[in-house]
Amino acid sequence: MTPRRFFLASGALLGTGLLLTRHARADLPAPLSAEERALHALNRLTYGPRRQDLQDIAAQGAEVWLERFLGEQLQPERLPTPAALQTRLAGLELLTLSPNELLHRERALRQARRTQRRSEAQAEARSEGQVMPERAALRELQRQAGVARLLRAREQPAQLVEVLTEFWFNHFNVFAGKAPVGLLVADYEQRAIRPHVLGRFRDMLGATARHPAMLIYLDNARNAAAGRPGTRGGLNENYARELMELHTLGVDGGYTQQDVTELARVLTGWGLDARAIAAGTPGDGFRFDPRRHDTGGKTWLGRRIAPAGQAEGEQALDLLARHPATARHLAHRFAQALVADQPPPALVQRLADDFLRSDGDLHQLTRTLLRSEEFWQRGTVRAKFKTPWRYLVSSLRALDLPADAPQPLLAGLAQAGQPLYGAASPEGYKTTAEAWRNAEALTQRVQLAASLGARSTLAPEELAPLLGGPPGPATRQVLAGQPPARQRALLLASPDFLMY
Image 1: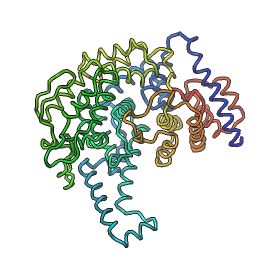
Image 2: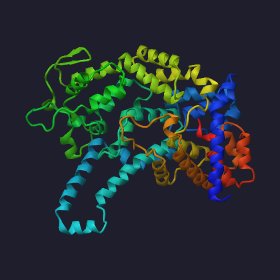
Image 3: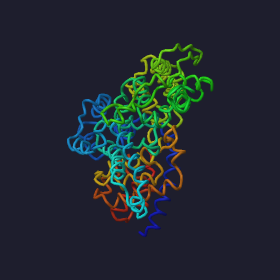
């Protein structure tokens, strides 16, 4: 089959399958079998099933396997990180450096570049395309953030933690393209997001608010009371606005522009620990500077905020974390990501109620969702369209391909429109099919399928069960007579695999 015919076959398979995917479910109201429930759990709560998973289900029985699987995923401490993964992560210098140390290196580079520009000899070297060794070293550190995320998603047994880490990072998105955030994203994920995905929302909210990645990305590090002696800049409302619109209350959460301004005043003085960063001493990079803080009284969301320094901001975060509008906003986004693009309103309401009753316990929120009837309905199965990131990782897991050469994989992800840590908007990446199901995106997936299919030695008949069962008639017709590498590629490009 020529490349052109391969793309045509893939397109035919995609077109037929997507139609079937959209119209078949209404005719299948029967409850899921135990085997279907197990496979649904693997597709939705992990980055996709592996051959070993199906072998375990067959050996243990689907009901027994599923009960054990859900218990372990909700108690990730029962799933130790494999030694090989620990070794690879330990070899990534980026994960060993604190925000202070990372920002110290970045500032040292900026100083070196200023010095370099004053030197005619160095200017001539730059004109010949040479790159400063320090700059190359920082680029390598930035690259390691994507490698760490890919390795964990591909190999970590506590897969639900990985899925939830992606969700909550996206909720509290920071953009690696805004220097020096690219150096900080791995630490931000590792310290501000990952430890809290099954903890309390208020803890995550505070950790993100104080992390240098967020302080720099949404400019709260520059937020200062206007006209204060010894300070530069003035009031900056960027973080205060997104804190309410995206992170907590939601765009329809009942706040006004005046509330944005007042919250920005509350959060003045929250910034970077400049002295510790200049010294390069280990530390989290955060410091409250009372000289930059607006010491006047504030009226915010109808409440009087008395002058109290940093405690004003903590009080605001407490209120936002417990607000009913926050519960509704988070419940909708959570159900949309894990259940359906248009989540059932009754489920959203139950999640919001549980969030308020449990004081923002995210373990309880996750458990409520997993116990819901809506999560296990037939119409929920394969109702979500894979993002490029999920498609890449699920392909590696299905084909049992290692991530030994991660950089080309991450480059392909960027070409598909979802570079890791590359969402410039504070909204992060969309999780709905509408954002990703287009001709250009599908073409990129066909190209990736062809590349990965050629690298794998997995027999096509071993790959097919990972797609949810035997191929349908349209898929079998396209596969007939093709060599194994092309069959693998076509299976990966099929609608059976594009949905999860």
